[in-house]
Image 1: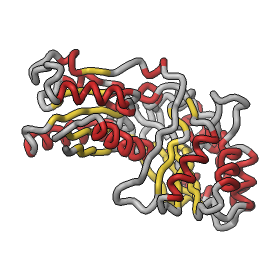
Image 2: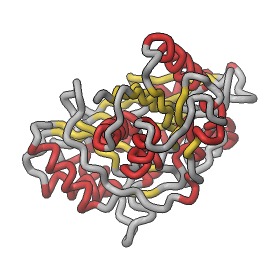
Image 3: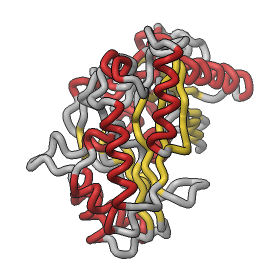
Amino acid sequence: MSVDVVTFGCRLNAYESQIIRREALAAGMSDTVVVNTCAVTAEAVRQSQQTIRRIGRQRPGARIVVTGCAAQIEPKRFADMPEVAAVLGNEEKLSAEAWRSEASRRNGEIRLPFTALDEEKIRVNDIMAVAETAAHLVDGFEGRVRAFVAVQNGCDHRCTFCIIPYGRGNSRSVPMGEVVAEVRRLCDRGYHEIVLTGVDLTGYGSNLPGRPRLGQLVRQILRHVPELARLRLSSIDTVEADRNLLDALANESRLMPHLHLSLQAGDDLILKRMKRRHLRADAIAFCREVRQLRPDVVFGADLIAGFPTETEEMFTRSLDLVAECGATGIQWKGLHRRLGFGG
């Protein structure tokens, strides 16, 4: 049996690809390639389709299953491709039952000719109806020295440039006890560095009893897993950073002094048109406060170039914001092709 997973996009997809491989193998899939797509830009979607065509040429007998955010948002786009045997949604790709059903089709127990109608290839539910996110135990991450733990999925915000909520649904979080147990499990398996990831990481806990915040989760992990050497955070939204998180940055040496910020722009009018919840001054004040708390902190940031109505002067304010925040690792994204990505 062989199951290969080709992963595009974010750390959350990388984490989920480990689950996909495990569940597909456990279901008895064979000679299968799963393409776990990303919808963050038009280029990411194009690369996914290009990869599918290449796999079809190189492995003509393999069954190609497409999943991920692009497949969730535009399933028919992929179902129309003759190389594709099935399209699974973002909820289905983590389901043991879905993979058992797919294995039955693959092994001929359910007859589904390769020339089946596109609709028969598609198994994608309404992601907005998904209300919970369960913890998934992952044994390890092939080729990586650090492990990812998904603690949150989806997003309740609707930034005008971002398509991701339509691929991931509304915000939902994994209970703290389950997160701590997964971190401990990975530490026992030899991982000394854990990265907490999610779609809207600082939105953690909004649907849980008591509405715990990300800072509380961080403190619980560091308290209950003393053998963990290093804890990192993926991209955060500055306006959602809570006091516990800032205190942990100031006082917990095992919480790494690196924050990747979802800034997106440095001009207030553009930020308002993006429906962001912070202004330029808020971002600068946040960076100043964090640097006072943790002088060795390093900031990265996401920024967008070419948002509709942005002028050269407005774009210059984004460039100036990089200097004022002291950010170094900048990921620029352009909107000249598609309004379709988030922080």
